[in-house]
Image (tube, rainbow, N blue to C red; front, side, top):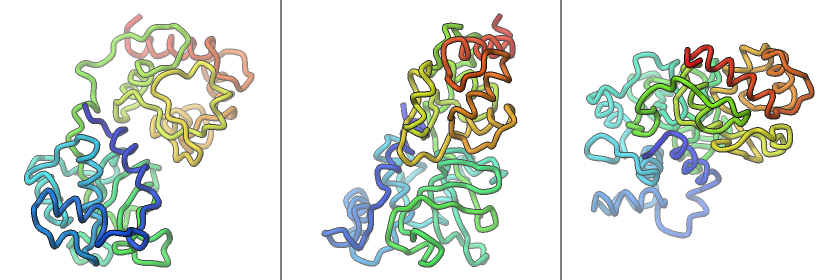
Length: 285
């Protein structure tokens, strides 16, 4: 089953793509759209591709979009997602994997679309196709796939794809108190904290892995991390900066929070104390 985590994995793999370096005519996303729609003009040079990028990412990750199943025009995307009840009423509720639509000039017509990677509270981190790497160039026809930070003012709609694996069949009622933080412990924490439930701690600093020997399945390690929405929520509870990335400072705050020895290493006893607290909150023990 497809999840937001899988979609973001695919999207991250496209970072750095540029239509200017593409040896073929048009873009890889336009050529794909031409094949699936049998409309050759999508593959021509100069065709804007931000929406074709998001549709390509979703299709590659195995996510089915509303009919016709792929989009090249953002207003049509908004219309069809809304028809299925997949337009969020509150854009500030954007979650990783949601589609974020932008109206740069405030004329009521969406100009651009990207994929939410992290909701940072006061702004979003998105992965976008056909944008520029900074504010210097075109934001909706820049030619490249980049990670961008976006404030709320330009966002006109947030759409949620049908992530069949993004929520468990039933809520967790108990986690094993085995001292290892894997996918099942993450799902329970996501359930408690009200973040998307997929069992994944996304985009964590690879260099910090040494401080978390009890971290097992479902942890994503990266050299250029952007953080996890769940970890940011937990950091707020621990009273440290909510950057969404686990490191020794967060581990020390976590150890103080759960009343165990403080050494900056997330070992079995630290995780077991957290799992006991999880079960108290779930009512499973």
